[in-house]
Picture 1 (tube, rainbow, N blue to C red):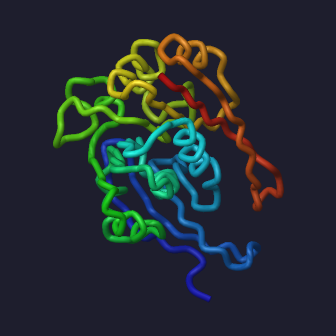
Picture 2 (cartoon, rainbow, N blue to C red):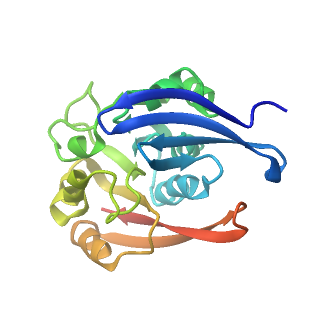
Picture 3 (tube, rainbow, N blue to C red):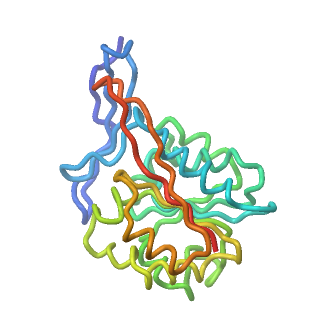
Length: 239
């Protein structure tokens, strides 16, 4: 049957202890669930990934043409990135994460989707602070090509524009911060964001000051542990 609980990796980071663990749920027919913790907070669980996948599907569905260069902000367990790679129009996908440990888990294939990403030559990991890179259009997300522009940026890091992992991230979710991100997009480019909260009118208004089109999608998904239905929000904004 295997272990009911296993800590796969532990390392200290400036943001707190980073832990990758696997848990077997007997009440769910022995389902293996991978979990990521940072400090006392659960960042990600493989039990819940519908919204991460919807972030890619909804965001990229708003793009036209082909030969897309795309940025994913926040690697997590890889669900957003792998869903993006399902689009054959993608030429290159940069996955930006500030935690070297999270990238290492995927490179060493300690997580289920690591091999999928490693085997796709379009995918490249970038170690860096997404928010600092977003605020520096002259530098940008690609360490090999300063000022490079992209067709889409898909962001899944903070819990929501108001519920942040770090207080300094708040400046990104303003008209000024969003404007700097928009400078790194091609005309017609898309910014999409996952949020665990309901649509936020204030944030929608700020998006509307920068982007030509703004929409929200409430994505519902089952919670098998609680036997309820949860929901999150995906924002999609287009220049």
